[in-house]
Image 1 (cartoon, rainbow, N blue to C red):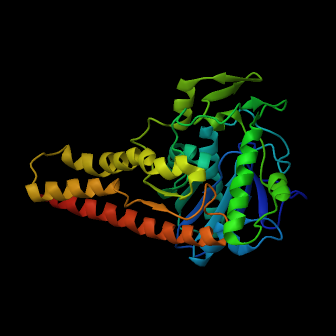
Image 2: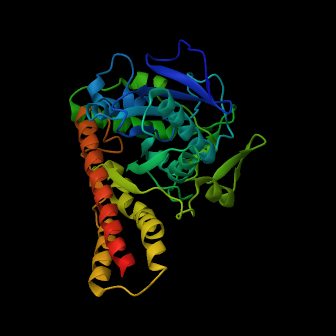
Image 3: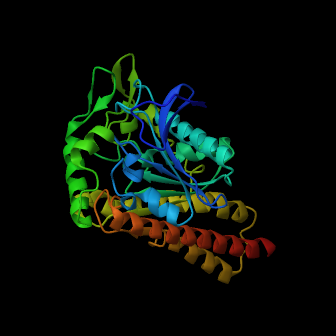
Length: 365
């Protein structure tokens, strides 16, 4: 880990770090050191500035503010894009690289600020692709990732989404999709209207937040990698890069989505898409180690265990906040999102605690 020299492109509170020579833009706010560090991971084409703001914006419009009100330390960490804040581009940056970078940066701030080592990762949109890679990297870094929170994100399954238009290669080797910018503008302006004011003017948003991205970070749409100056479709490589099949080594996940038809895919499918990983985490990490030792179980304990496992995908671990794909952007949604994070964190802890307690009873039989 290397701290790079400050530049005029950085906003107050930001710093540029390099992990294995790859830059990452970071913003940290210290909270209660005994509470988890909450890490915001932005989606495709975005810097994490969407979660902590830009100079002149209202602090209360952003997640960092409301998480701080709840006592959490906050880290917004941005993967390298084509935005001018970075000194160069990294066209072969992968999802494995992304997960390792987030974990390394988190370890840096945990050590520097005397934090507990527990982290919660908020993955927005395409940030869902790193759920497995960052979980694995956090374990290797000695961090306890207690929860992954999907903010209208897509799980790390290559080709799960259809790309709305072509994704092309720019001269610098990064992938470009201008059609997304038009969609982002619609989302942002709708959130502005819901909050009754402009959160970040669009010209500033486009300049200070957006940028082209490494092609591998489009795995959920095109499953391609960068090789010798070209984009190569490679589904097998993308499956390994995302960790889509590593459901035995996957974080416990909860989901929050918006409720607008403008973001219909996430509003309608997030609960089901993440449900597979939710139930596999509980089954593989908690239940199977006990049941593999004996199938002689009191019928009442067995029924209770089935009921608890059913509840995991019944909606208990899922929530909605008014708004579109950017529902957490703006004071109305940011405040509500943090409230839902606390609720879901409690529900997840309670469910795991109840399952563990029942399994102790079964183990004792």
